[in-house]
Length: 254
Ligand code: BTN
Image (cartoon, rainbow, N blue to C red; front, side):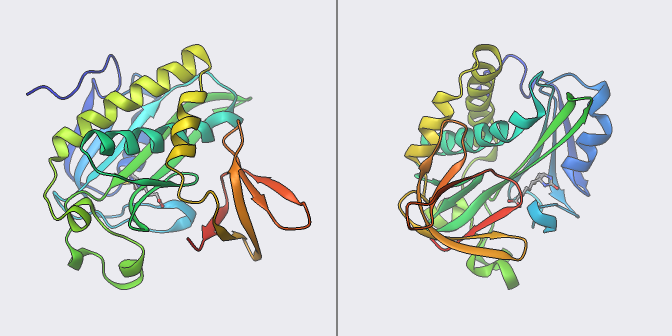
Protein backbone atom coordinates (compact mmCIF):
# COMPACT_ATOMS: atom_id res chain seq x y z
CA UNK A 1 0.00 0.00 0.00
CA UNK A 2 1.14 3.51 -0.78
CA UNK A 3 0.82 6.04 2.00
CA UNK A 4 2.82 9.06 0.92
CA UNK A 5 1.01 11.29 -1.52
CA UNK A 6 3.03 14.51 -1.40
CA UNK A 7 4.83 16.69 -3.94
CA UNK A 8 7.81 17.74 -1.87
CA UNK A 9 7.33 17.07 1.85
CA UNK A 10 9.15 13.84 2.70
CA UNK A 11 10.37 13.24 -0.86
CA UNK A 12 13.94 13.19 0.37
CA UNK A 13 14.57 11.29 3.58
CA UNK A 14 17.59 10.93 5.85
CA UNK A 15 16.95 7.80 7.85
CA UNK A 16 18.93 6.85 10.95
CA UNK A 17 18.88 3.88 13.25
CA UNK A 18 20.14 6.03 16.06
CA UNK A 19 21.03 9.71 16.36
CA UNK A 20 21.39 12.31 19.11
CA UNK A 21 18.62 14.58 17.85
CA UNK A 22 16.95 14.84 14.44
CA UNK A 23 16.56 18.60 14.93
CA UNK A 24 20.29 18.95 15.44
CA UNK A 25 21.05 16.90 12.31
CA UNK A 26 18.48 18.81 10.27
CA UNK A 27 20.08 22.13 11.27
CA UNK A 28 23.47 20.86 10.10
CA UNK A 29 22.25 19.98 6.61
CA UNK A 30 19.45 22.52 6.16
CA UNK A 31 21.30 25.09 4.04
CA UNK A 32 22.26 22.54 1.38
CA UNK A 33 19.01 20.61 1.34
CA UNK A 34 15.81 21.16 -0.58
CA UNK A 35 12.64 22.19 1.17
CA UNK A 36 10.61 19.27 2.47
CA UNK A 37 13.59 17.04 3.25
CA UNK A 38 13.03 15.08 6.43
CA UNK A 39 15.38 13.60 8.99
CA UNK A 40 13.95 10.64 10.87
CA UNK A 41 15.42 8.19 13.33
CA UNK A 42 14.36 5.00 15.07
CA UNK A 43 15.78 6.38 18.29
CA UNK A 44 17.20 9.60 19.70
CA UNK A 45 19.79 9.56 22.43
CA UNK A 46 19.45 13.27 23.19
CA UNK A 47 15.95 14.22 22.05
CA UNK A 48 15.16 17.85 22.72
CA UNK A 49 11.89 19.37 23.89
CA UNK A 50 10.66 22.92 24.33
CA UNK A 51 11.84 25.17 27.14
CA UNK A 52 15.12 23.28 27.49
CA UNK A 53 13.48 19.98 28.34
CA UNK A 54 14.42 16.57 26.98
CA UNK A 55 12.29 14.24 24.91
CA UNK A 56 12.11 10.50 25.55
CA UNK A 57 12.64 8.76 22.20
CA UNK A 58 13.02 4.98 22.58
CA UNK A 59 13.93 2.77 19.65
CA UNK A 60 11.24 1.80 17.19
CA UNK A 61 8.41 3.10 19.31
CA UNK A 62 7.69 6.54 17.96
CA UNK A 63 8.00 8.98 15.10
CA UNK A 64 11.03 11.16 15.82
CA UNK A 65 11.39 13.45 12.87
CA UNK A 66 12.39 16.91 11.65
CA UNK A 67 11.21 18.64 8.49
CA UNK A 68 13.39 21.20 6.72
CA UNK A 69 11.31 24.12 5.47
CA UNK A 70 12.26 27.29 3.62
CA UNK A 71 9.23 29.56 3.78
CA UNK A 72 9.71 33.03 2.35
CA UNK A 73 7.65 34.72 5.02
CA UNK A 74 8.08 37.22 7.82
CA UNK A 75 10.01 35.42 10.61
CA UNK A 76 7.32 36.69 13.00
CA UNK A 77 4.89 34.31 11.32
CA UNK A 78 6.85 31.14 11.93
CA UNK A 79 4.78 30.23 15.00
CA UNK A 80 1.93 29.66 12.55
CA UNK A 81 3.89 26.89 10.87
CA UNK A 82 4.11 25.09 14.18
CA UNK A 83 0.35 25.38 14.52
CA UNK A 84 -0.03 23.98 11.01
CA UNK A 85 2.07 21.03 12.21
CA UNK A 86 -0.16 20.48 15.22
CA UNK A 87 -3.31 20.67 13.10
CA UNK A 88 -1.83 18.16 10.64
CA UNK A 89 -0.98 15.68 13.40
CA UNK A 90 -4.48 15.92 14.80
CA UNK A 91 -6.03 15.40 11.34
CA UNK A 92 -3.77 12.42 10.63
CA UNK A 93 -4.90 10.85 13.91
CA UNK A 94 -8.49 11.51 12.93
CA UNK A 95 -7.78 9.66 9.65
CA UNK A 96 -6.97 6.68 11.88
CA UNK A 97 -10.16 7.22 13.92
CA UNK A 98 -8.21 8.44 16.92
CA UNK A 99 -9.69 11.48 18.61
CA UNK A 100 -7.14 13.97 19.91
CA UNK A 101 -7.05 17.53 21.18
CA UNK A 102 -4.65 20.38 20.58
CA UNK A 103 -3.23 22.00 23.66
CA UNK A 104 -2.28 25.42 22.33
CA UNK A 105 0.07 26.15 20.78
CA UNK A 106 1.40 22.81 19.65
CA UNK A 107 0.91 19.82 21.92
CA UNK A 108 -1.41 17.00 20.99
CA UNK A 109 -3.15 15.39 23.91
CA UNK A 110 -5.39 12.38 24.47
CA UNK A 111 -7.13 11.92 27.82
CA UNK A 112 -5.32 15.05 28.99
CA UNK A 113 -1.92 13.52 28.43
CA UNK A 114 0.59 14.46 25.78
CA UNK A 115 1.10 12.17 22.77
CA UNK A 116 2.94 14.62 20.53
CA UNK A 117 5.15 17.68 20.86
CA UNK A 118 6.66 20.05 18.32
CA UNK A 119 9.92 21.95 18.56
CA UNK A 120 10.40 24.54 15.83
CA UNK A 121 13.74 26.24 15.36
CA UNK A 122 14.71 28.81 12.78
CA UNK A 123 17.68 30.57 11.29
CA UNK A 124 17.26 34.01 9.79
CA UNK A 125 19.30 36.99 8.69
CA UNK A 126 18.13 40.55 7.99
CA UNK A 127 14.54 39.48 8.48
CA UNK A 128 14.91 36.74 5.84
CA UNK A 129 14.46 33.12 6.76
CA UNK A 130 17.32 30.77 5.88
CA UNK A 131 15.44 27.75 7.12
CA UNK A 132 12.93 26.49 9.62
CA UNK A 133 13.28 23.11 11.29
CA UNK A 134 10.05 21.66 12.52
CA UNK A 135 10.80 18.79 14.89
CA UNK A 136 7.95 16.47 15.72
CA UNK A 137 7.81 13.70 18.25
CA UNK A 138 4.83 11.37 18.20
CA UNK A 139 4.57 8.79 20.97
CA UNK A 140 3.14 5.96 18.89
CA UNK A 141 3.85 2.56 20.41
CA UNK A 142 5.52 3.41 23.69
CA UNK A 143 4.47 1.34 26.66
CA UNK A 144 3.38 2.50 30.07
CA UNK A 145 6.86 1.68 31.44
CA UNK A 146 8.44 4.13 29.02
CA UNK A 147 6.84 6.97 30.96
CA UNK A 148 8.68 6.99 34.23
CA UNK A 149 9.60 9.75 36.61
CA UNK A 150 8.55 13.32 35.88
CA UNK A 151 6.64 12.46 32.74
CA UNK A 152 4.50 9.76 34.31
CA UNK A 153 1.46 11.98 34.69
CA UNK A 154 2.00 14.12 31.60
CA UNK A 155 3.02 11.80 28.81
CA UNK A 156 1.27 8.93 27.08
CA UNK A 157 1.26 7.09 23.77
CA UNK A 158 -1.28 6.15 21.13
CA UNK A 159 -0.82 2.51 22.08
CA UNK A 160 -1.43 3.14 25.78
CA UNK A 161 -4.54 5.19 25.04
CA UNK A 162 -6.10 3.05 22.31
CA UNK A 163 -4.86 -0.37 23.44
CA UNK A 164 -3.69 -1.01 19.89
CA UNK A 165 -0.36 -0.97 18.11
CA UNK A 166 -0.42 1.68 15.38
CA UNK A 167 1.54 1.53 12.11
CA UNK A 168 4.17 4.26 12.23
CA UNK A 169 4.58 4.09 8.46
CA UNK A 170 0.91 4.72 7.86
CA UNK A 171 0.66 7.53 10.42
CA UNK A 172 3.79 9.18 9.02
CA UNK A 173 2.38 9.14 5.48
CA UNK A 174 -0.97 10.50 6.61
CA UNK A 175 0.73 13.26 8.58
CA UNK A 176 3.01 14.33 5.74
CA UNK A 177 0.04 14.45 3.34
CA UNK A 178 -1.99 16.56 5.75
CA UNK A 179 0.94 18.82 6.53
CA UNK A 180 1.78 19.51 2.89
CA UNK A 181 -1.81 20.44 2.14
CA UNK A 182 -2.12 22.97 4.97
CA UNK A 183 1.43 24.29 4.53
CA UNK A 184 1.22 24.94 0.78
CA UNK A 185 -2.15 26.58 1.20
CA UNK A 186 -0.66 28.90 3.84
CA UNK A 187 2.46 29.73 1.82
CA UNK A 188 0.89 30.02 -1.63
CA UNK A 189 -2.55 31.37 -0.80
CA UNK A 190 -1.95 33.00 2.57
CA UNK A 191 -4.62 30.67 3.90
CA UNK A 192 -4.29 30.24 7.63
CA UNK A 193 -8.05 29.92 8.15
CA UNK A 194 -8.16 26.17 7.52
CA UNK A 195 -5.55 25.63 10.22
CA UNK A 196 -7.32 28.00 12.60
CA UNK A 197 -10.57 26.14 12.16
CA UNK A 198 -8.89 22.88 13.15
CA UNK A 199 -7.02 24.47 16.07
CA UNK A 200 -10.23 25.97 17.42
CA UNK A 201 -12.32 22.82 16.88
CA UNK A 202 -9.81 20.59 18.57
CA UNK A 203 -8.72 22.99 21.27
CA UNK A 204 -8.65 21.52 24.75
CA UNK A 205 -8.05 24.93 26.35
CA UNK A 206 -10.96 27.03 25.13
CA UNK A 207 -13.39 27.56 28.00
CA UNK A 208 -10.95 26.34 30.62
CA UNK A 209 -9.38 28.06 33.62
CA UNK A 210 -5.62 28.03 33.19
CA UNK A 211 -2.44 29.37 34.68
CA UNK A 212 -0.15 31.20 32.30
CA UNK A 213 3.47 30.94 33.28
CA UNK A 214 5.96 33.39 31.79
CA UNK A 215 9.28 32.89 33.50
CA UNK A 216 8.58 33.74 37.13
CA UNK A 217 5.31 35.44 36.41
CA UNK A 218 2.18 33.37 36.91
CA UNK A 219 -1.38 34.48 36.22
CA UNK A 220 -4.74 32.72 36.26
CA UNK A 221 -7.42 33.32 33.69
CA UNK A 222 -10.00 31.77 31.45
CA UNK A 223 -9.24 30.90 27.84
CA UNK A 224 -11.91 32.50 25.69
CA UNK A 225 -10.59 31.70 22.23
CA UNK A 226 -7.89 31.83 19.60
CA UNK A 227 -7.70 34.96 17.43
CA UNK A 228 -7.06 35.10 13.67
CA UNK A 229 -3.33 35.33 14.27
CA UNK A 230 -3.40 32.07 16.19
CA UNK A 231 -2.84 33.78 19.54
CA UNK A 232 -4.51 32.56 22.70
CA UNK A 233 -7.12 34.89 24.19
CA UNK A 234 -7.14 34.83 27.97
CA UNK A 235 -9.65 36.64 30.17
CA UNK A 236 -8.09 37.69 33.45
CA UNK A 237 -11.34 39.11 34.82
CA UNK A 238 -12.56 42.72 35.04
CA UNK A 239 -12.90 42.70 31.25
CA UNK A 240 -9.18 42.31 30.77
CA UNK A 241 -8.63 40.00 27.80
CA UNK A 242 -5.04 39.53 26.70
CA UNK A 243 -3.66 37.84 23.63
CA UNK A 244 -0.80 35.52 24.26
CA UNK A 245 1.72 34.64 21.60
CA UNK A 246 3.32 31.26 21.59
CA UNK A 247 6.86 31.23 22.77
CA UNK A 248 8.04 31.30 26.27
CA UNK A 249 4.75 30.64 27.97
CA UNK A 250 3.56 27.43 29.49
CA UNK A 251 -0.10 26.77 30.14
CA UNK A 252 -1.09 24.61 33.09
CA UNK A 253 -4.27 23.12 34.37
CA UNK A 254 -6.78 21.49 32.07
C1 BTN B 1 8.01 19.56 23.19
O1 BTN B 1 8.67 19.90 24.16
O2 BTN B 1 6.80 19.34 23.29
C2 BTN B 1 8.65 19.37 21.84
C3 BTN B 1 9.16 17.98 21.61
C4 BTN B 1 9.82 17.78 20.26
C5 BTN B 1 10.43 16.41 20.08
C6 BTN B 1 10.90 16.17 18.68
S1 BTN B 1 11.37 14.50 18.40
C7 BTN B 1 12.12 14.91 16.88
C8 BTN B 1 12.77 16.27 17.05
N1 BTN B 1 14.13 16.14 17.50
C9 BTN B 1 14.30 16.60 18.74
O3 BTN B 1 15.37 16.57 19.38
N2 BTN B 1 13.14 17.10 19.20
C10 BTN B 1 12.09 16.99 18.21
